[in-house]
Image (cartoon, helix red, strand yellow):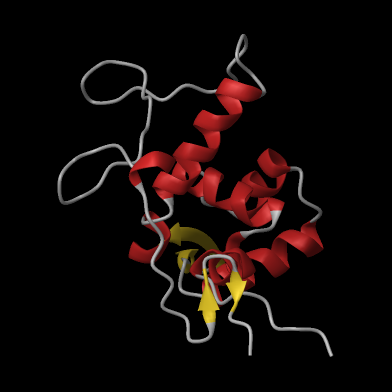
Length: 153
């Protein structure tokens, strides 16, 4: 019998948004693109796959369908508060890609209100310190698990 994988909020989140087109839909919505045809064009997603991803994101409460036309009835997609909370994830993914894949030719840059090009970083909400690997310690709370894996019986 195959052992169960580690209980993890990352895995739970990836089950909703961890597929290429789901993340690209979120990118488009965050850039202000809300209508199906434009999302399809900008992501390159096949229409059937895009329909499935949008349905899943709506069912998960990450996006909402908002009517913009009565006749014919048409909808656009907007981020819910839960969807808005994914913005830092998109920003850090973009920053990683800029550093490691597109260092000399960044396809999109975001300007912060301060007037500078955004360089996102993850910080502790309590103290403001950088949340880098050396500053973090894992405390596993899932019953039967340690940082190394499942407890031996």
